Length: 180
Image (cartoon, rainbow, N blue to C red):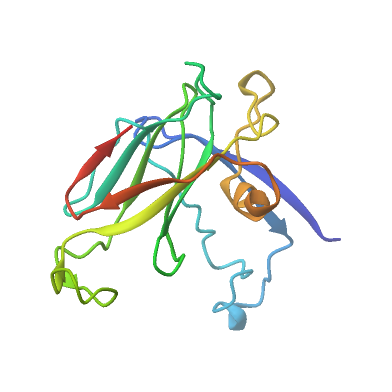
């Protein structure tokens, strides 16, 4: 009988945000199928998102954001944030706000310098990447009293179909943090 189990992950060190993940059961018990994602003998990878005070890796670009409801100071708990590159819409990073609406989104792999392939009128070498940030808030995704934490995988699947914030532009640079 196919079913699933919902697991909640908490980091006692508080370097990462709590989240839920859904694991499909049963898992394949055949040792010969260990290369498949549904193998009983393979760990389930569960990406965790850094808490707003989380540590940064060397050379990471970082966005420290306050996700607020409209023009108010009310933070949106566990809002989901996506960062995409301007020139090709490639997803560069995702993150989540904490219970106050504060988020740290980290982007690894931004080169210190690269060749500018989009313009002949500016420098041939660039040190930043133009990107857009969008946030989405699902009020049903989080209820600490009920033991319900957001599942970022489910939020990613529904992101394009539900209302989200206006896009905001940033220039991301290796080793640089931007706060808004």
